[in-house]
Image 1 (tube, one colour):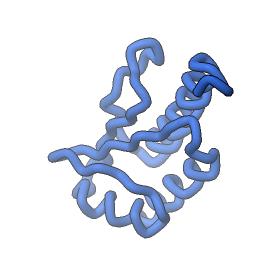
Image 2 (cartoon, rainbow, N blue to C red):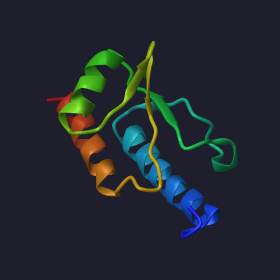
Image 3 (cartoon, helix red, strand yellow):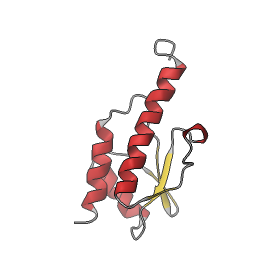
Amino acid sequence: MERHGVAAIETAIEARVTELVEVVERAGGRVLSPADPARRAGILSFALPDYDPRVVGEALQAEGVTATVRGDSLRLSPHASTPPEVSGRVAAALESLRE
């Protein structure tokens, strides 16, 4: 952390969360985390209407993405080390549910 600095880490996390918000919304998902980046932590909570969260979690796992199922929603916890390609894997997982 000292090497990169807190600000750089926060920026990287915010970039990942923002990318994931866009992916979830494009797939018709409802983002439950605060919309304001200043109020949002490095966690993205969302629901995909008409889909059981456990099924969504399994689809994400099949793409190598670990999500936590919390009742009727899911939670992703990207960090600064989460590569940008994860957004593509999340998109592929959510798209696979429509096939």
